[in-house]
Image: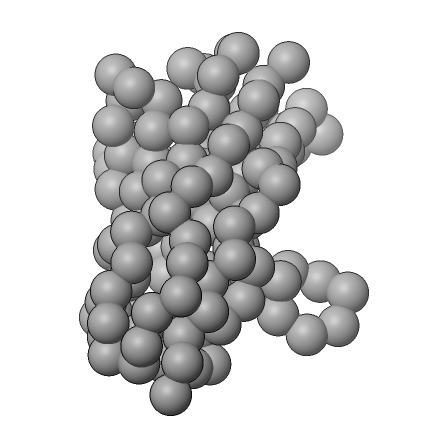
Length: 119
């Protein structure tokens, strides 16, 4: 079983910065990829950034050039550095850890951390 815990959310003014952290424990050392989603509208979550072995990263178009994801394998931790924050970045951010691929892929989620950007 994998446990995922986020931290680092909070309130910041537009143009400011925050850094989110996500620590994974359990069998997370075999993680295929890790990353961040945010709740968005409707019933689905939107990908913000993800990081795989390599490291290979990908970002939502809306955060490219402003957000940076990084990974500390020794600590099973990932970070999301968020710069030049905008009010539209306000959301609950969820960290995920994925293990395996195809039909054996399992995704574990944290409980989320609130990011609020004031105008």
